[in-house]
Length: 143
Image 1 (cartoon, rainbow, N blue to C red):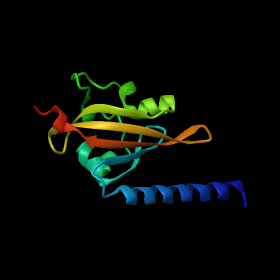
Image 2 (tube, one colour; image 1 turned 180 degrees about the vertical axis):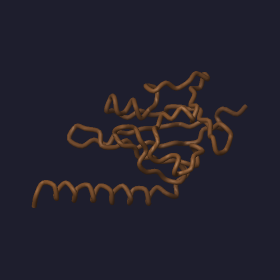
Image 3 (tube, rainbow, N blue to C red; image 1 turned 90 degrees about the vertical axis):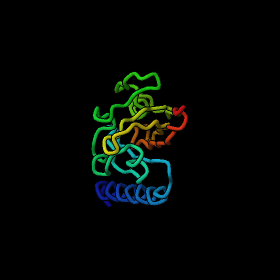
């Protein structure tokens, strides 16, 4: 078998694995997104795009740092590119946990507070994917 065919088999197996994973997490109320090493979302469950206030089409294939989202810190300051958990994971190859983000949701015309966790998926020392979870913690910010 040629190396090219072996790589195609591995890619197909990986895609099937991602699809199985997403089928497993589809019913969760926690959002799950899978990002490529360029921080572009390539897959998500329904809760992810619901929590982010985007359609699936708006979410997939767009930058994780799209300025349209208007993401802020707890103190109201703007998230810079390097602040995003996905970028931190891609830069440092380590999980980034418990990041609180205020996200303006364009489709719902509101703001939600999310706790975000990001984990690298490594293969031979390189990041091949980042798995990111989103949990609605807005109730912590309502007085």
